[in-house]
Image (cartoon, rainbow, N blue to C red; front, side, top):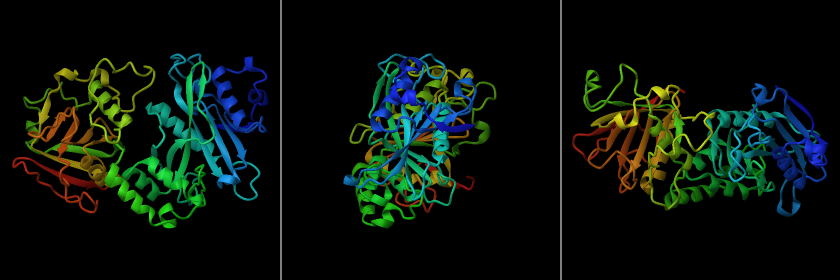
Length: 458
């Protein structure tokens, strides 16, 4: 539960610095720099703090009235700034203190700019709950956000009938990164977008779409202000922008390297009773699970993506890195609940498969053309990680290093992790430009095949 009340003027003025933790003081200081005349802004406050067992990770969301900037055609709007994703206290009550040289907590706070409607005298509070929801995801999954990221929400951000149902993330145009005794903090701004704009970001890259939105005033303008009453997409406003998307995908490919999805795969190259033959090791009757090291490799692939025009490499499986790059108190979003009982990585053999059947729900299926056109044809890889278990499916091109699927064995599995290898020289499937058909495909190798099914759930 949250409460809205005026913020602490003393904190904003920093006149009683000793009473305020250094992390909190640093963020307040940056707010004061941007809003020197709003020392006591309205705040949405978590009544029961997260570190006392409350459900909301953000201690506060400050809300400022921004007059805009006529010289660069920026509209008047409300500016929301979170406090809690970074380490505010430095005493391990929420975030593990790791020193001043790295990120403070998760290393960022969220901001949001909402167009001020005529006659509004106070900021709407629904953005605060939206920010709390995103913060809960970050805390529960340990997945941090970066500029250019996209967030599929599938619901109007304010629970109205608005077309603004998804989000992109970018650097806040006014809030500068700050250095605190507990590490550095940057400010990531949430930008509300329509479904068509989200899909364009998936097909190409988020930063490219953000640049297009900046050039259209009603779609965000220079400071990317969200207008929940916007009824047209940026492509409705300027149809020629689609040409920029198509050219960008053809030239750059996509920088989306993977998604969490509803998906599964099945080895159809042998009878079910033959499943646990000498090519794999299974403990008792337990289902196959991702090993810690496979989990780490997939997590790194999803987190880092790939740099444009760089050599495509699946992050190496490195036991020295696993478990030492983040606090142990945080649970990896890809980690199995029973990972301690997993078959040791070195005992799980790679299985070469002759035929596989892949299943995707509709939303996941819409990304298959992106996977092929924006990733495989550019020599990269793309991973689907199941949200319902340990299953993972990675499509790799012939130019990807570190894959266990090879030219001789294009379908290979490591526990529940399947890799499917394609060549980027030619379109690998007949539907590479369209998702309208999920059909059987027989590759050149005479004894291998792969089929696809669109699932009806979700």
